[in-house]
Length: 224
Image (tube, rainbow, N blue to C red; front, side, top):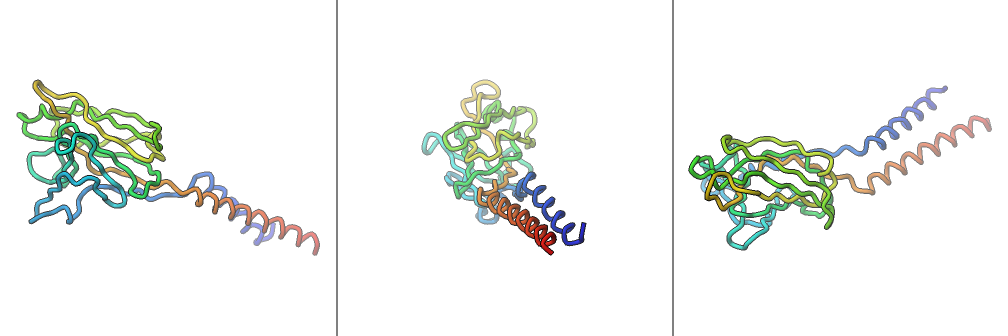
């Protein structure tokens, strides 16, 4: 095999490998650590819905004026010392791509709301997560909250939360007695964009071009 044919063969193999693996997409972390959330050095955004962050939207669904989320780094809230999203009362938090395109939700940090033991009855028992493609539910998971651990935990999500158009988070149950809220905290959501169909079309076109060039080169050799 000549060097030119070896190069063509190597390029063809590389393209086939890329096609099989799929286009790589860079993951990004939605961590709420932006200076625009700060007022006089304290991070606090309450009731802003929808919130657009790094090309993704967060919306609170529930009773107007009662069910909402806040971005803050105030003491007394479960977290890791940095700003995080806290869903209050019975709010459902809905995550989506601001452009409406599908995305993957790979992992996230989660926890309860208040660190004060006397206020932990406000925590939810667990967080219910639902993934959707359009109006169809395609993913479902639960994250259990530990009433004795007032810090964030990390959870990785499976393939059912890949290629979704939106993901909802809702607190269920109450910890302790007399609780009537379903509060929880979210932070460090790892997301990535899903490649557009046009990307695959371009890869297929490139594969076809390489194959055509390979056949043309072989015919030219035989004709010579």
